[in-house]
Image 1 (tube, rainbow, N blue to C red):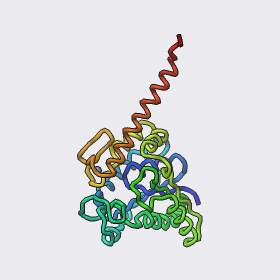
Image 2: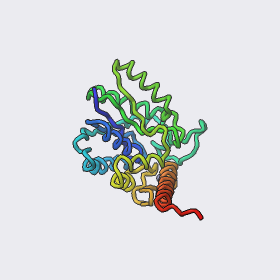
Image 3: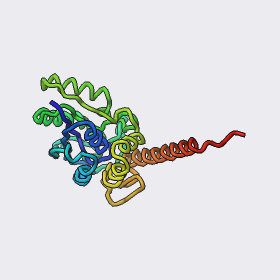
Image 4: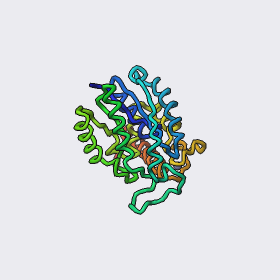
Length: 247
Ligand code: ZN
């Protein structure tokens, strides 16, 4: 077994994970999930990103089959702000009411079934517990436990890869820049969609989105911090090249 299957939603994190996988593995396939999400329009962004990422580096030769799984039943059985028309708020549990219980457990389990059939060893997901929304199924321990359960239950040796687990959103931008330069960060900035409201019309410096939902807030803050870090680094390098002589 070799190669990778990337859980690709059409958002910033999973697009960065896709580039990360294309940089490492000779063969990469992708899967997306349609679960009745209110920002279902994110699925349209997938096609644009997949088309354009093929022309970067030698990634076109490595990028294989894409599929979207219909998990509409998840939207029907979960009562959350991400899968129904309710205002974004904090639930009694203390978690945002956008948290779809078990969503990533299901996604990764379905992905494992595909990876098993396709002979793909690595399953790549953009979950992160650094500056995240508190979703318990994004945590490192959850993913490690699920990897053990999947490998026992399927009698296989899959590896759940989480390249963003310990980086914040600013570092995610920096990672994308390392992997694919300005072309990739511009593709991610202009074409991926993270906004929970699915706002594709409002264009901001950090990308498309309403600018008000928690997902937009995380994305904007990370983008601004990444830009500030870039400015600080270039100023430091300039002052290093032109040291001011001491009196
Ligand atoms: Zn938004």
